[in-house]
Image 1: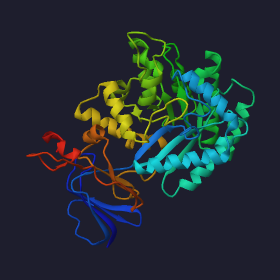
Image 2 (image 1 turned 90 degrees about the horizontal axis):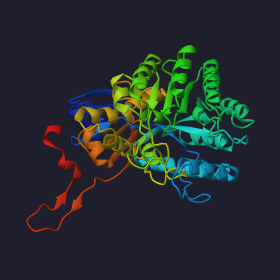
Image 3 (image 1 turned 180 degrees about the vertical axis):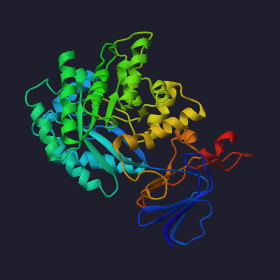
Image 4 (image 1 turned 90 degrees about the vertical axis):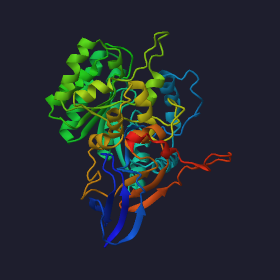
Length: 430
């Protein structure tokens, strides 16, 4: 007797007709034709059942703050930073918690059950850290929130930030962040990478740095990050986020850089939506778009996870909380349109990002947590194309969100009465 059986599921690896049995919040079996009884049975009807979506790069302290204290008229990164600097002194713990919880509601509806959020520790009040630590506890029953101590104004740029970052880690923030390209000099940037990696090594923590988020091909702190990763024995625990300068680097240098990253077992976290929006602002035409070299990284065996970065905040007025929007943009911006490419990008918003965050019990194998999403699509490529409804969002074997299938009614003579977008999958994908 199981608590739940999902029948006739298609899995991301292409297996069809699979049943998934759940007992006490854990996947007990994944195989065709499970004959046992269950307290609840869900017929997936051949639809795609996937592990939950994972966002490895987000700013939950800023989310849903669009228009506060005013709109970003230029749409640039620098005006967004200036706006956040105006808003930050007015932030209250209550307002931060309210916005973060509202965003988590949206995330759950999209099947997003794990988020790594950077927390700005540039304000010595640390109200952002206090608020998001409380949010982490509040959402723990249904969403895993991992927090990064992020010195958004630069680790060395202003007095008191080094101490504030240490206090945030002492409070329970669990990942060390940085932003070396925003320090006042290249030398200060390199010093910050060394100092922050040393802190992570001493405390046994992970590292996730905003690194080279610029069009400047000479911004090369990712090289320093790779070197310090090896120096401090942090292999497998370090991620470089954005890495947009790599878009502008010459190929010879990148041919040296990517093997260094692979050797250091560094992960990369591009953020296609925000990178495409903010980069190349000084260009006329030809116009760079600033997304890092995702296909080449994947070819080198570098673990790539795709993040949202922002949803409706001073930097980005768009966003839906849907990681499939992120993968959809990545398909177009990287020209990764083959079946294998789309599967790789689907992995980048699921299993790859789970590995970056170090999530335990993640996956669709026996012994994993019974956390799953049933999508109104038949395979990963179709899921990216359609960005379909989440029919069921399941956490530890319990449905925590559901959306009715999208079906349109037609009133056309001689034509079908119903249109189901998932029914348009090409035959080769079925």
